Image 1 (spheres, helix red, strand yellow):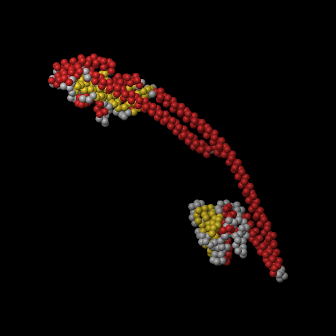
Image 2 (cartoon, helix red, strand yellow):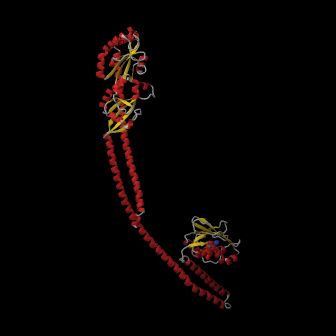
Image 3 (cartoon, protein in one colour):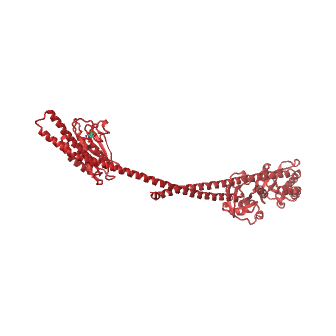
Length: 613
Ligand code: ADP
């Protein structure tokens, strides 16, 4: 039994459950992996945000410094006077670089600011000090490149043009002819004795390099500022482009304007940096053994900030070495995988053991139950057989003495015919009648005990034929009663013809026997399909069965309280019920649909599953 449970149902069940366990295990691993990966990405993202705000703070501070230093220069009356003299000379000497007078004023201005310029460079990382004349931007003196002056930059230096136009101080990022800087620009106003009013601007600028170096030290992150080729080429003089960006790798369509570490060149070779115009993002980039969290965001210059929608001039890249965090994540995934495999094997082991245990228990339970059932069935079969044999023997053995009683009573009746008084004749009559009834009961009992004795297996039986033979058997009774027997189309069922003949014989005989004196007897037989069975009905318009007897009429010797004079033993319907049930069907009785009479219905197995009469 146990062996039967383990194959193949056992294995199918085991494999099915294994699949469920495996899927749950995989789901557990996947969820863990995704959660770990997301946490790592979130940590990188947050780190990126922090670096980004650090960078923004540094920019703001630098702008404030530049503006302060520019004011420090522009508010010196000697500077105001000398620069104003220069302005007048340029105007008198034909604009542009001007002539002799302009050169004298330029030299004087240079001398005036030289000391401060050196201080600014040394202490504040200033890279540029530039005097511009209004309107627009005409370079009067580049303290940081004293040999270059007199050029117009109206189309490049928008921050200067704007300050020269409205006299308001400004800060911003801008790429000029010589370099890209974080600039503070303030107007220069003429002294009252020179007529007042702003006539030019002074600009102090710093590059990104000191910012990135300081931030790297503070934040422990690599920082680089990248500028798009196109932007640089369209603003700077070529000689300065060549000077500041010699032999740059063209990895990203950009120049490295400033960087705190050389890693940037390797990072830029990563495909993530195909274009630096992308939106702000943090990505993991592997460089050899190390993994970096690289954050980048676009960089906008003065013009782009004033005009939203203008493309960025480059981008800022910040990176931290996240190798440890990534390795910790990888280690945790290995641990997870180990746990997953271990858990899976453990569950499988328990499953296998548990299922074997259950299978064994079930098998032994089943064996016990089956044995009990077999024993019970055998006992029942034995006692049924004994009962049937007993009934058969009894009725058979009763027949002979009963026949003797009846025939001797008949002889006695003949012999005493002249001598008996009326009462004696009546008593003898009762005795003869009793003997006859006894004979009928013995006959019916014998018939009952014979039901199911036929050892032949069930076979298709055409009920048309059965009914034809029943009609013949009952022809006399039908005729005497003046009854009509209507038989509808009859199906073929599985059964034994002899037993089925007995069923119709009893039912139709009863239908005729229990007729109503008020109407001509009519008996109808028809069949209806009911799934894999046939439901047969035998309907009459007779006296019907009172409600209180209906439950009992199929029992042995049970007769409904009909009027005396109708012969019967109370065994016919018991025989019918036994036959129907031995065919696997059931039988019940109702009032006829017409309202008068009875209808007996019973089911029988159809000979085929789809036939119709
Ligand atoms: P019986 O030998 O008395 O006819 P049955 O077992 O055939 O015995 O029937 C049991 C009782 O059921 C009958 O005595 C009768 O009262 C009632 N019965 C059977 N068939 C009909 C019928 N078609 N109409 C009215 N009563 C019936």
